Length: 142
Image (cartoon, rainbow, N blue to C red; front, side, top):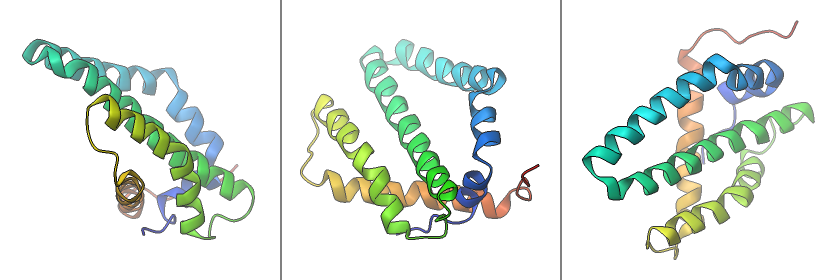
């Protein structure tokens, strides 16, 4: 399982600034424009994929937000360097039911949903940590 260190520590240590950035009008507008463009292209090329694409976007957005939230809560509690397993379990408790619903809606198997969700969760954490290690210096609290 991937560690919850790196960019997630940085985000957790300065959660207010990150949440303000993610919730800012300009960031939300950019996200909406990109997602809207993708939705429009898919709806024109293959209308049957429009609803599943929207559902997948929502699931991924919820998943990323949950990872950030769990790290921010762990940092606020002073345990950001604690168990990645515990933090992953907290994320998966919220996400697995959403993944299950998504898979069922798409007519896909949910037989291994917890194991598969754990693999995806580890991959997302790895991506965030990789971005953090190659990214700018952490923002220091004022």
